[in-house]
Length: 422
Image 1 (cartoon, rainbow, N blue to C red):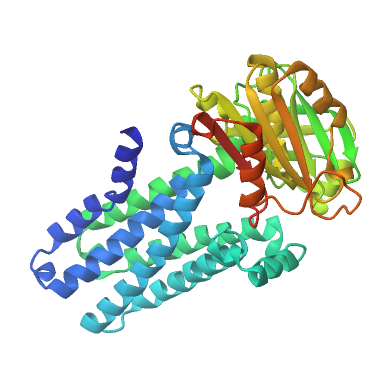
Image 2: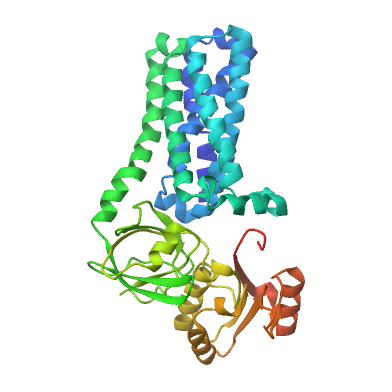
């Protein structure tokens, strides 16, 4: 019920602006085309302002939906806004002709359209990722400009600039110039979006800077995998659920202060330290492998609803991990080892080579402590491997679960890995 109410409030959030605009000149908007132009413009403007609320990581909202769903919804609304802006532009120009305010609006439209297109191609795990050609193209760009995390951040900052241009556009319209109430409504929506943007970009960083972590250790598991062990500079680790993630910033020479998302792999029962297990996939993560103890870390966390702790009614757990997708599974396994060692657990873990199967000794200890825990590695490229080979697909999962005798109707399934596997 709460989720539905929040969704309805967001969808209908442009209505107060529409009411103010209509009340300012009801005779004008008696024309159906001009009314349509007003509605498309008002909805686009209000929703674009609200986009900066959706990306501000507001905790009470994120707890209900999960940040990944929030971001997907944010992407859909952004594309809808571009479509509304195009419709608004066409209707207004057909009825009123080209105006000075329209020129400014065209600039904002170009900015948002470019941001949406680049985000869909280079950031979103859309249905396009099912195309092998598109997937190879994305992998090729990951080490170049378009695939770099810094580019993705710059892309969102460009959207903020676009909103500022859009604000100038609406303030130049005849409705805004003729009516103080219309001008006040435009300012109120823009101010709301701006305040949330400043909270996210500035205020939250100040708060995190007052509660830093210290890098206690960097534990190497393989040439490309390591666990970053963090301890709070003061107090205890915050409460979090197994499988959740956070946004990390590190203050260390050779590393940018840009934040990056990582899954938390430690047991939340241990409030003395927190662990992030990281794979070297680029310059930043490779730099983390070389970190020295003592560096300061700032962690904006926890986020996400990918956690077995949210589903206490499940009688068994199936974890399906691909590559670095093992990290949230580690957090859940460590949590269950402490809280429910008798639970039936199956981990199907896809990797390239045997050397990628990290923490072998800990998994052996888990098997001893959790008598109903089964680990099934599936190796894709290792020809010498005697166990399951190939990719983690529907046939393999069905056969493994069939042989296990697991009651899948009462099991919880948690899947994390690269887009083709998902």
